[in-house]
Image (tube, rainbow, N blue to C red; front, top):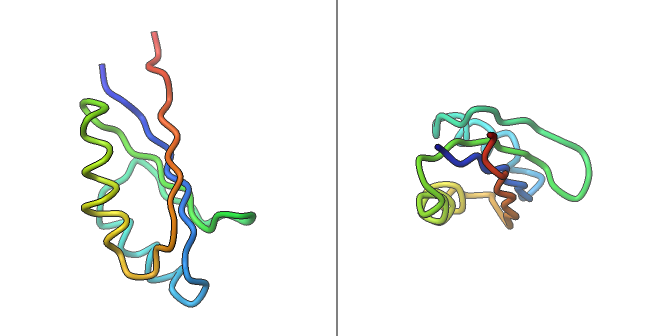
Length: 78
């Protein structure tokens, strides 16, 4: 059973479009620009929970213009 994570992403406002494009290259299930305290919400699937931190630190947070992330991991569906 896999893991689904929702990543709330704050960006430098001048870089939001660029960040959206780069996130799309990471093959998420969905990526949407939103209004509120975060600029982007990314939905991604993983084989195991242990895969999430590497994805965040090695790929998402490495994108120029990403200033902060908050990750929500969903409970597996029955």
